[in-house]
Length: 412
Image (cartoon, rainbow, N blue to C red; front, side):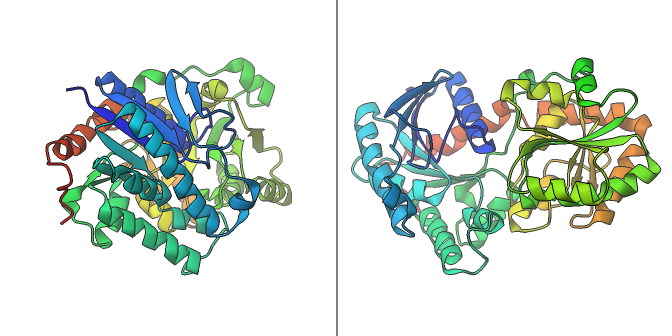
């Protein structure tokens, strides 16, 4: 029997995010396994103009955006998301007749999936990619312990207790879910990964781009490619650069991307007199990013220590490692699941400028070991963190659910 899975998503491609890229990789690999996949996005997927859309060979069923007044009303907007998604789910379920529903964070998707699945007695798998209450704290839309924070956390737990199986992206999240009273036997880690075939190992330096950006000559380029959120700790990177340049004068910092912290970072660079050492490249089209990766000698990820970074593993370091780029990162929990200090990258104490300086100095003073560490990083991706291995774990989640009598799911 061909397995048929209906995925319920917050948003998807063509929008660019770690969330949408993980989704695409999962869908492509599940199809490579011979499974049928169906896909629906909720009303928070912006830019929707049609109820169905084809993107990169994947067919998406869309919920239309909420009317302005519903989208802005506190609490009511969340209820509206669930009701809208539930209605659309019922239409799609009747049409495609899946074997199970796989809802992905946030919990609103899981709640809509549970409600829609009742009529057909379909099993529901719920995947936790992040704790959205913690992300909201960092984005400044709530604070720890607020009513919204507690309600979001409670809804997450409500969904986790009622679905038939739980998956999450890392061990940190798994520990948090177990602490909520969810039996460990019902939780499977499906870690973030990359497709090594899509990343060329040790890509030659793009000399033309280096010259265009003023990064020619013998400069050692530190780099960050991604979104400039507060939890990324980029302010520490900028402040550490002055101390590093006193020991390694040819070091430059290349920042590619954008986000809420961009203006404050630009001001800090100006205040510290580092305008000649820090280059803001802006947001780059996805098909051009590899050229910028080729310019970076050492990727720097100084994430700050907080619940979000301790519990969630990022995707960007894996992309850098797949290309044979050196990775220097803070020792938050999410990074420790990817980087083995001194083996496939370098870790430093999180949360301080001195820690960043220490980590960079350790890396820059070990140039003779760079080829060995780059090779180990690529090997780690090829053997442990590739999508074939990671997505293959879903079979062990899905198959047992389909072997149970309908309506007799075990939530003990």
